[in-house]
Image (cartoon, rainbow, N blue to C red; front, side):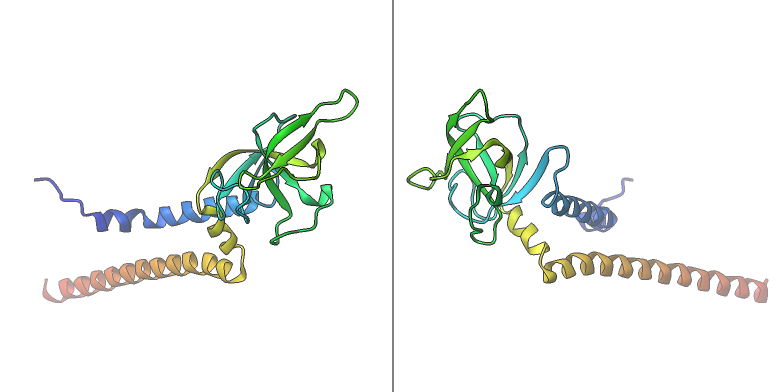
Length: 193
């Protein structure tokens, strides 16, 4: 006779591990959105200048390269090029539409948002480029942005903690109940046998 496996029991069995994996991956993404790690960095897209290629709320993975070519989508540090922060973002992600190579200096780039009609006025120096977009994840940027808020962080910490506490309390109750029943059975066995 084969034992029937129900989806609910499988979910119960692995939900603890899935929760740990979710919390770990989310924590790593939040960390990597603030710091470079082996030349990789995550950014959340705040504006629609790159629609349809990259949408508002997407999470992009950016990697640093020695130089960039025509057509690459790059992320630029706006502070270095002297732009005022727009929409609370310190970074700008646009496509390279012109590359100026010079023997004496680093490469310079002219960039343009796919949705914009004209290229940006500022020429971007190589040292202002954070990196090239190598991957995008739809809507994950919005989730990460929410998790960075006080409310999101509270939920992000409280929900897994509450689940772990509840699960462990259930396990403790089960162990105590088994111990109680074992002692009761031992007492009954001594009394009648």
